[in-house]
Image (tube, rainbow, N blue to C red):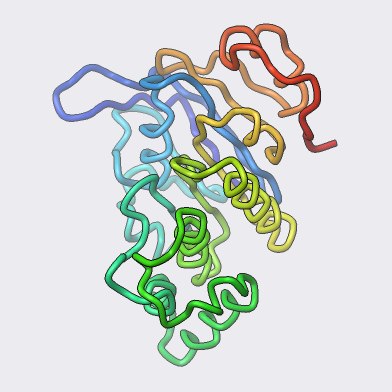
Length: 245
């Protein structure tokens, strides 16, 4: 569904951060992008989303070259959802108002029903529909950001470090919600993560970046068992981590 072909990218007049990246993610699949800080993970996600224009290569969605297409058009016309790492909710708005903001590109007659579907999917948010988003816990805010991205029923969902700043218990809950989205909707999900063990626990495949290039790629289970992956990028690993069959 998504193909990244030989993408190079950077910011302003600075040097390239990405150096010829190739990546593929299909429907009903979670692909996670791992690697140390500064390796280019978030830059790659922003290239896919349309916030950073590649200097070379292509971003292809369902056979259509979207390399020059800006982020707002990808959301509106190509059904791509994006959840940034920070500033991913409107704190002064209520929970319901936040989700409704995600439905702004839908026909007006469909918006209320679309919001209600998200409340059915996330009862904990429905119970706090009239509360300000600023009053939510970190995990609830992350679920709210997911619901707002999902309300327009995207076919592709991009997540930038969904576990950032969460407690271990909430990290597990959020990743469980992400896996449930894939299983329920058949959506293509691409996420950048620092929490490698949790990410590999729900991902189908993974790419590990180093210095702006793909250093390792493969099935999540295989990468978790790869000594090079464990030593160089995970710093050792527990012996039992749940991974997709």
